Length: 307
Ligand code: FPP
Ligand code: MG
Image 1 (cartoon, rainbow, N blue to C red):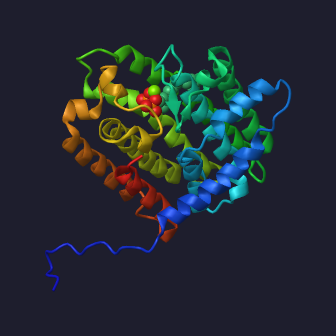
Image 2 (tube, rainbow, N blue to C red):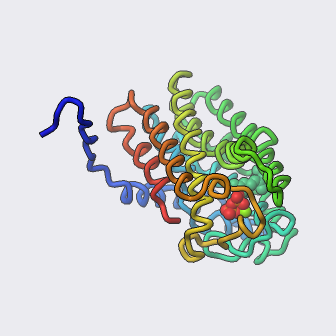
């Protein structure tokens, strides 16, 4: 019997995240496949397609499609932006893996772009994907008022640049090998390097569907929380997962003497903090009915994932 001061366990819903993610990933993969046909000079298109179509969870596009749907929009409205988000994410990984940065040989279970095509082409493949992402949103988005498309393009620009990914990566590189990185610096790195693009993924879907400022702010907070939780879990997996599970080299953070959440807090406390952030993210979705179930389940999946 449940007494008045006992917590009633939250009703488990029947939402099937695995089928949802598979269905959405297939949709995104199809759209990505046709987004970038090979033309002359073939080599650069092949290099761009090699990394863009190398698999991956497609989390950013899926988040964009999910918030567009939550706000009453259609797949057609959000798909070009969803593809652009994956192009930007992919280019950032191609550059991140270069010898001048993390010097990694494997990504998504395959040799990294520069290992296959050489450093020169890998740099250009990244550049090609980045500029194409903007062109793609501008030319392919349908049934969305131009002001909303423009806002998405402006947010994408800010997210990629020194105020976002580039800024986070610079501080990350500067922090390597330093033993006195504060939790504030670490959080700055992650909110910029990973959080910014996740936030823009979530928010852009909502903007395309015509969400209000208040709705965009709530979704921003949801995204900021899952972004940080995602990174904490990434740091934990770098220590606890296998190379097969992750599809990329493991133990790199310790090797490069990178400050990580587990190195500051230990693994157990890092897990507690990640779960707290996920709870906070889910709390932002309180006004929405079961239509927000994919976003709730994705938030929870972030802390339970093994790859
Ligand atoms: C992976 O981090 C790297 C990123 C999430 C983004 C890095 C950003 C850049 C290289 C800037 C890109 C340039 C532009 C113009 C956007 P990680 O090394 O911690 O993770 P990993 O283990 O997956 O490599
Ligand atoms: Mg790296």
